[in-house]
Each structure stands twice: as C-alpha cells, then as structure tokens.
Image (cartoon, rainbow, N blue to C red):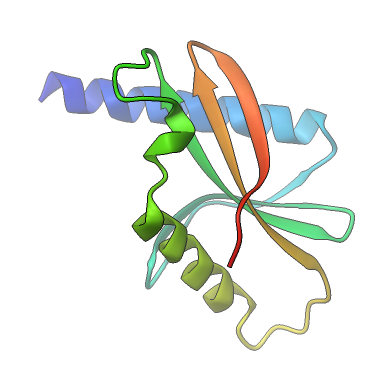
Length: 117
C-alpha cells in the first residue's frame, strides 16, 4: 500500500512541476484533473489559439520504459473522447492538441502533438 501512496505523491508533484513549466512558458491553465464521463485529463491549457489536453507521466526509473511510453491506446482514446466532451455545445475556434509531459528523474520533456484524434 505504501508504494501506491508514493506513486500518487510522485504523480501530484509531477503535475505541479508541469503546471509551473506551462505557466512560465506562457500557457494559461484552464483545468487540472478534469473529470469527465471518459476519465480524467491531467491538464487542459491554452496558449494563443491552441488548447492542449496534456497527460503528465512521472517516473524515477526507466524500469518500465520512458514515461511517455506508458500512455497507451486506451488512455489516448479517453483523452480524445474527453476533448470532444469538453467542446460539446461550446463555440470555441481553436487548434486542439494532445500533448504528453514526461518527467523522468526530475527532468521535464514536453512532447507536443504526442498523438492525434
């Protein structure tokens, strides 16, 4: 059980680091941990005419591969469905993007357009 709590704590720290990075890079955070019928989106952020749905993956080791490799097809589909739900009945003209921010041993890597709808 302790390992689960450590992973939750690590994930929350990673999400906070990602939010700080995004703000410093000129992004406006629209939502964090946004729940919808298809799951949860870690961060929804806007910069200029782009709204990005961002999955944050944090790892201390590469025992299970790179953090971004943990974003499988089912997770991507949840993000795509979540984005469709987010925009339903909203008249917003923007570019939609799906990004991954991976944090490995404290180093942040922002992968823009990590996957497409």
